[in-house]
Structures are given as structure tokens and as C-alpha cells.
Image 1 (cartoon, helix red, strand yellow):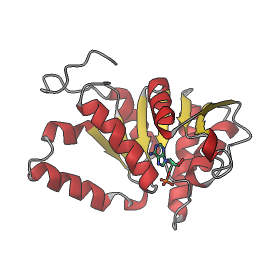
Image 2 (cartoon, protein in one colour):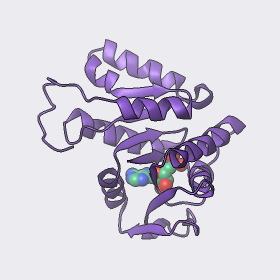
Image 3 (tube, protein in one colour):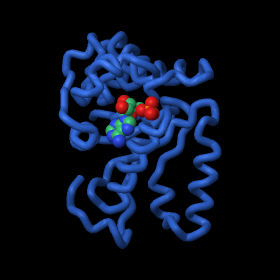
Image 4 (cartoon, helix red, strand yellow):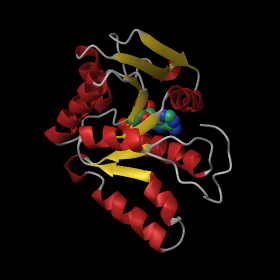
Length: 192
Ligand code: AMP
């Protein structure tokens, strides 16, 4: 079982973000799961990887050549896959992983989460997509997504596909027990 983490290349302004990222890295490694992430040494990305490595976990980093210097590729990650584009990065991360968890982050994090969730909506995969809502960081985004569903731009079933949890243990458990909805009109793809 490999879990993919999307999170900020910055650490944010609250200690709870960094602490939660570390706790998630430890929990993934502690349960014997692999971590797949963007391969950087900086921000929450570095924190989740450091914690997983310290706990003896298996970590795979996927980083575009062009970001090797800007995001400081993590020197402790032995399985570092260097790819040629952002698109290749996301495709490889998605293919390697059995589930996706977004932590607080910026537009890169949001873009990664939304893309993989939309792939789920289209039936390109049937893997869990989750938000780890540390310190209420995503409260307003979650409220907005409910408004999007109420405005009928998003099916409630698709909204409900997005797991929302507030602790690392809870988000991992929810990913493990996730079942993609059946009968969704777009869920016709056969890939998992
Ligand atoms: P941020 O949340 O903006 O700090 O970015 C988190 C991570 O997402 C960083 O590793 C960014 O390089 C990465 N990122 C930003 N935009 C994209 C994209 N379009 N595709 C893949 N990764 C991205």
C-alpha cells in the first residue's frame, strides 16, 4: 500500500501544519505503508518525508528536473524519480499510489488534489482522495465545495468521494476503508 501526499513546499504560518505533516509521515511508515510525494526537501513536503524516513519507512520522491534546485531534491530519499515535466510528475505519482492525501499547501497542492479527484470522478481510477484538514485550514474550501454541490455544479456523490479528516490516523483509516461509488454515470472506466 502506497499513499501519495500532496502538501505545501512552504511550512505555513502555524506550527500545527508542520506537526501534522510529521505525524502523518510517521503514521504512514509506522503502519508499514510506502510514501509517495514530490521529492522536495522544503516545507511540509520535506517534513512528511523526514518523518517517514526517520520512522524507517519507504519513501519515493518524484521531481521534475527543472525543480531539482528550486525545491531542493531531498538527499535522504534513495528512490528519487527525476521526470521531465509537471504532467509526468503527477501521472507517475498517481500510477505509483493507492490513495491520495492533501495537507495544507498552496496552489500546487490544490491543483494536484483537484486533478486526481477529477480523474476519480471520470472513473480513470477508483482510489481514495482525501483532505487532511489540519487546524481547520480547509474549512472554507470544504464549505465552498458544499456550495458547489448545492448549486448543482458538482454531484453530491462526487462531493462525497472526497474524504475529509482532521487527524493523520483518521485520514489513513478512511483511505483504507474507502469504496468508490458504483453506478455513477461517469464511472465507466475499468482502471483501478
Ligand atoms: P505549493 O502547494 O504551491 O507549495 O506546491 C506544492 C508542490 O506542488 C510543489 O512541489 C510544486 O512544485 C508542485 N506543483 C505546483 N504546480 C504543479 C503542477 N501543475 N503539477 C505538478 N506539481 C505542481
